[in-house]
Length: 456
Ligand SMILES: [Zn+2]
Image 1 (cartoon, rainbow, N blue to C red):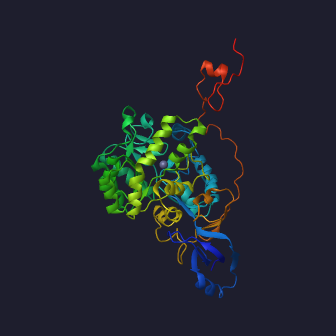
Image 2: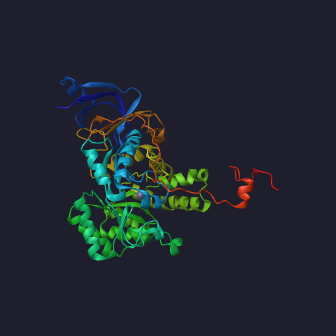
Image 3: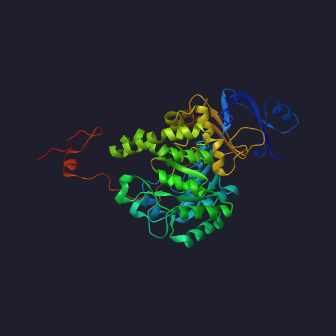
């Protein structure tokens, strides 16, 4: 029998949405063995149990990030992901970045799609104990049509680029789904919607026929593998629901009938709005266009009513950070979707924590096995200095997460050693446009002209 560990005097947030309570929690091996009086009775018979006094601290389930691209390495652009990455190197870098997630309290993640679909290898290495990482469930390449995704004309008409595979026709769809299942996909990822440059003003459009989408689900489900769909716009979600998609990402632009259909089938929705929220709140610091900031603000606001309805009807909302892009770097924002849920959808702190823990276990295909502090559950746990039930933002403050356990094992949450640049890894940018006025006069941080040199 492996080691036992008793947490005493803990403020327990159990991940179900219930109010915090004071309790002892006993971990034996990879599982939570007992709580409260049961834990104390049981530990009396154990010889080498360690004890940890958590007076004033919180014990809670680890965060489950249901939308995190661990192979993208905080990319600043699609071309960087599509063309600058290498297979083995990006897997090694993912292992390095996994430490940042652990340090931020993430004990489980769903990676929808990865470059070279190498998250399958990163996951297997983590499961074999070769690297330390959160629990990983993953898709392979995102399956896409030539008009899918958010990269417009960068999306190739056929074949593999970066993290996606562009397919055409029934035969390719069937072959690709089966191939991904064989390779080891936990989920099949479909980009249901896409931006068509000429018609970008319409927002993302559905890029599949009903028959094609249904075919993907039929082939995947026959092999016992669920399907997750990136859906923006009403038609995309409507068709995805009809096709039998098991998890909806984003889910923006749904009308009432589509929202009703999602409620009827209780399909979990992971809005993954952290990216947008960061853009809205902090884009001005990065020089982001006002028009873009407003677009993202509208996207969050417009979807609030339908997200609220889903939540009130008992449809699980999952927390996803979209980490992997420079707007949401690893380790910084994994708690933030909970803040979005409280601020825009009116959830309580405890309800939001449930979305990021107990409900999130669905993304790992481990509902009822992790994400909750209860006897029999996997011991994927955090010790937090503070009380996230009062303010979820505590979980984002550096140093507040004191200990992280995955499968009952304490993870190394020390700061990863600093890294140096990798040759040819980033897309070099020339920076802003060098108008003659800017070159000669410069512009200060407030956007005011600030003469740098004397004009002739
Ligand atoms: Zn994504």
